Amino acid sequence: MSLPPPSIQTTAALPKAVRARGSYLWDASGKQYIDGSGGPAVYCLGHSNAEVNEAITGQLGRIAHGYRYNFTTDALEELTAIIAERAGGSLREMVFTSGGSEAVESCLKIALQHQTAIGQKSRRKFISRQRSWHGNTLGALSVSGFAERTEPFEGALIPGIKLHPVNAYRPLPGASAETLAAAAAAELEAAILQADAETICAFIFEPVVGAAGGCVPAPPGYAQLVREICTRHGVLMIADEVMCGAGRCGTWRALAHDGVQPDIMSIAKGLAGGYMPLGAAICTTEVWEPIRAAYGAFGTGHTFSGHTASCAAGVAVQNIMQREGLVARVAGNESRIRAGLADGLARIEAVGDIRGRGHFIAVELVSDRAARTPFPTERKLFMKIRQQGLENGLICYPVGGNVDGVSGDIVILAPPYNASDAELDEITDKTARTIAQVLRAEALA
Ligand SMILES: Cc1ncc(COP(=O)(O)O)c(C=O)c1O
Image (tube, rainbow, N blue to C red; front, side):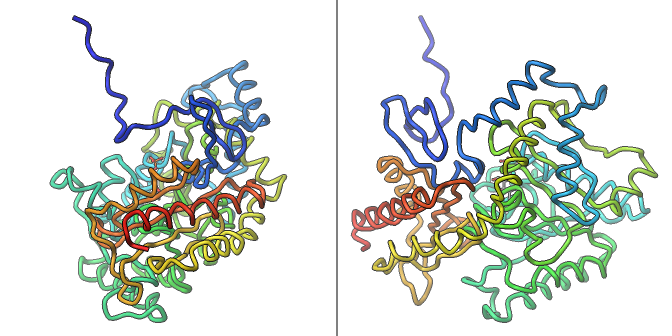
């Protein structure tokens, strides 16, 4: 008796992708899709970029993987120099990874190793925020505030402190949009003091919250206050820029917008634009030096850290981004994307908020605009929008759970940085039409 084919572990019946170019993909039936979200905010140069593909195949022809504990390579050295230059300031030391979760995991371990190296071994706890997503490995999951994704693993996660989310559309209890930055910073400082500062290793946050909140930028002044508080209490500041970094928000480092340098940061998705798996944990020379003195090396890394072909992809993607001025283009396009969505959704009462930065913009849907009430969770509106989008030839990134970890409906757009004006308009137009269509079908518009 022959066995059925193994499950490919998808949650729905999905089209089969067969090819892609620029901002478009095609499935096996020949149907075309425009990539409005760069998949999960990854494909910053779109698909099948010839220069990136040639850099990878050229590298594969020479050496695919010069295991970094035996060899250095040109690709590794070039990418290291590029990242140090783009990150700026003293963010000059790094560990490469295969993706975002490993990058965050490495950030957490670098923080712990640094605290140990400076004689602060009592500092073992992490503080993070609800409505944040830091990844799927156990450490990264432990600091994540995303109930739907963490619930099956409760009891096995590393204990930590979770603060309220920082979102001007849904401010902390007792705060307004105007007082939010100060209130959220005060909450952080109170938590550090309450737990005893000597036990706190680091505070980790997303400078612009991605999937868990729906493109939520930090309110003005918040990041500076966090910087001051962390410095005051010997707590390391970790910026998770896996989703919002590498140019996605119109500055290469998302936190550069706030004029703040973290001690440690992660990047991944846009670093190699999805052409190869690649991420990095980056830290300042001040964080690195005690580690170097005590241990000589970071106590984190994997077989594929600094994989040569992945680094070659990263170098090519970053060179194109620089040469074509794409980060500035992303900053300049924000108003076009916002206006496209606002125009297309002008008559939809369920649109509560349109927010974000650069090529990272989200629409939040609510059942009552004044009260900002989410739609009932069981309606799974976001899932219906994803499905309708696919039917309409649109890839967007709808997510649920932004309100309390379970309820809420968000649609994230994260187009390629080099999408043309016409493609951006097509993306916002199709997104607005898809949202309207689903709401009408549900008798909600
Ligand atoms: C902010 C943030 N951190 C970490 C991760 C985990 O990255 P990966 O899925 O590449 O492991 C993600 C993934 O979406 C993310 O958005």
